[in-house]
View 1 (tube, one colour):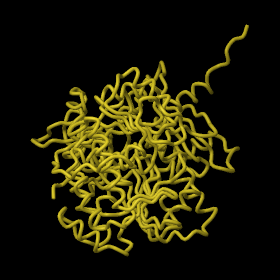
View 2 (spheres, one colour):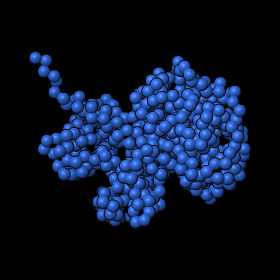
View 3 (spheres, rainbow, N blue to C red):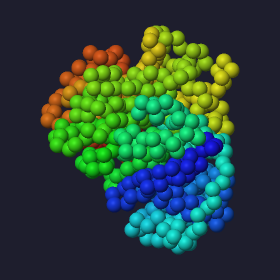
View 4 (tube, rainbow, N blue to C red):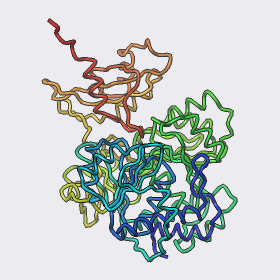
Amino acid sequence: MEMHPATLWEAIADAVPERLAIVQGATRRTWSEFDDRSARLAGVLSAHGLGAGAKVGQLLYNSPEFLETYFAALKLRAVPFNINYRYTADELTYLLTNADADALVYHSSLSDVVAKAVAAAGPLLVLLEVDDGGTPLSGSVAYEEAIAQAEPARRITRDADDITMIYTGGTTGMPKAAITKVGPPLAYLLETVPVLGGYAPVAVDDVPEFTRLIEGTENVLISLPVSPLMHNTGLGIGVAPALATGGTVVLLGGRRFDVDELWDTVAAERVNAITIVGDAFARPMLTALDENSSRDLTCVRFILSSGTMFSSEVKTGLLEHLPRAIIMDIIGASEGAMGMSIAMAGAPVQTGRFQPGPGVIVITEDGRRVEPGAAEPGLVALPGGAEGYYKDEAKTAATFRIIDGRRYTIPGDYATVDADGTLTLLGRGSSCINTAGEKVYPEEVEEILKALPWVEDALVFGIDDERLGQKVAAVLSLAPGNSDEPVDAILGAAREKLALFKIPRQVVVVDKVPRTQVGKPDYPAAKQQFINSVRPPANRG
């Protein structure tokens, strides 16, 4: 069997056809149904002229259709790519054009945006519309009707070098598509996921037997990605490990994060793996458990997170409620994984400190290696990673470099290396603040502020300053019951942990710190909040 997700999933469907593959509310798809529906969708795409190398856009909320579309594209050796469902028509137009899209699968509630984008970008081979109550778009093909009428695409031989494209907005510029071969990530999953259940790594040919072996045990992964599948954390961490080993993916029905829906679903479906994006999800999860500990959550064995900081005190709180769980905090990007921090009950870890992955190094901007214990910030570099960025040679050359004869990926994250080799993450270089010649990494300051008992959330950024070049500024929200705490007292407590030049010179207290839907910092919105609060009122004469 080739090292290819579509080929492996077909084999799993043959091995455990009646096991649940996808659950979302009342919708329950067995592995046999998942394979059949995806094969029929592949037949629809093929009938419209798509084949190997064709680009299939996914403008979809978390849903069974997202996973079916992904599977269908891989069956044809086509290239699925993610699209943020919050994009405007102009942003969608850019993405369809940049990706050289051949097909688009979308929810009908997004049809207005799709209509404008397709009119601007030019016609595609097929538009497949998933009905979620929106107005049907003229010229589109109804998803369910097409599947019901289609013949399943035949199974074919595929190649581990087939690719997917993962669009990442990054911190600056237009979205970029990281090109990733399907074979290496799948091989990594088969080496690591079985080990979590106490098994040896599994060869790809042995996966069908492994899926039968774990039948009826808690080693069948029942995974709930809380974050959107359109982002790599949801798909790559929340979905891929479960599907690679014949598990079940459970999806929330709501399109906004509802912490009670999360815990109710975990208890009802006996979810054993939850994927989130740091504190934005974890803090309300902990608050809900503190307020209601009556649910049976003994099923939870793993909480996985990536994409933003996950505070140590929140991990500790969650583990008090979920003592069987292991929290795996992954430092990574769409281009690859750099390291991991593992927390268990009674074994706390410090925020932002990670064990580097095999072969990971830290280098200075001129390519010199940072030695352990040097206390010198550098760029994290991981061996291998993505193949490059689609249609962006300059960014590819800057991110993927040869160091000492080996190819490394350098996503842009800065860290220091402790004497024992542990990485302390500082943040993305593009967000680094240069104040009077000193470099300040926002995430370091944010984590100190959030660890204070009076602070609920915080974002830190640079504001232009004539004397300093940039000054450190922040917006923060106060924890419940602390609305009267003076900012001076909060900053005074932070001074015990941070050098003076890192302390925000101006702070604006807001009701809610702005974050994206997946919990990542929304620095432009935070800066605008700050500017609106400190700007003097207009002179009305």
